[in-house]
Image (cartoon, rainbow, N blue to C red):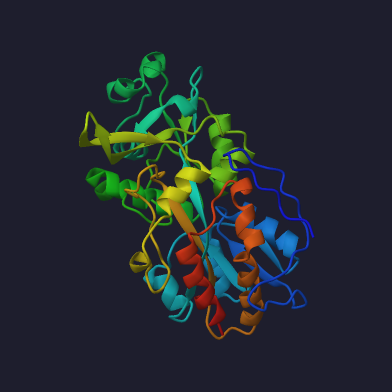
Length: 352
């Protein structure tokens, strides 16, 4: 058997689809399970489903996936967001969360003459941009850390999601941590109240295309889709507070981190005691050294008692296999931390 090729850089590898074995007693002979939902993990899910031939997955947005699971038109949903009280009530009051991978929400820009990888933005500055408080790239606040923006006179164009989105949910949740003003004006949800001037597009690929198509724009896109859209050199470094040693002393300093497999994995390093019983773990704003601050996990959602949960359990066994987890870096993601993976495997084995 051939294993999917892994490339440990942020550039996408040409992963080879091939039949591989299953873990946890999952059989390759079971009927296909259907899923839909988040576009954030769609690159990985579609690759895995194509490899294992046990599932199909359509990226339509987290909210739409939750609606499909509620309507019983799919066997599992993909979501980067936890259910709201209303969504949970509509689905019958019970849902199980199974984390599948780690990924980064990048902040790509399209500014003439400026390489995004060279830009440095703090979390507060990103919040001010998406709140509409900072409206031009040559704002003195941005120029202070980025002299190259001094002559960037254009008005900033915001590219955001039009659909209910777990990427929006996580991105806006992170920004509420960075800015009390953002928390008050925008808050966080699957459909944040973005400024009226923002251009809205469906899915992560839609936002990536918006950034590519509009001068002076900025958006928020998962790393895998940023790579697929050719935006890997357009994503900015995001600042985070870290304790660093200088002159024999330990000081707190703003450190800027680019999204990569290494920085995503750094954010995913948590203690077993930090793993919530329902596996709804929040990795955003990690204080770990070298961690990319907008790192998230995403979940397969299943409803206990559904008729095809045996098939879903088999799919999860494959998603948690060394072959699947080992392919993630080459697809623009990072594998689950081992302690989280072990807990998730146990939870998946109990799905009935």
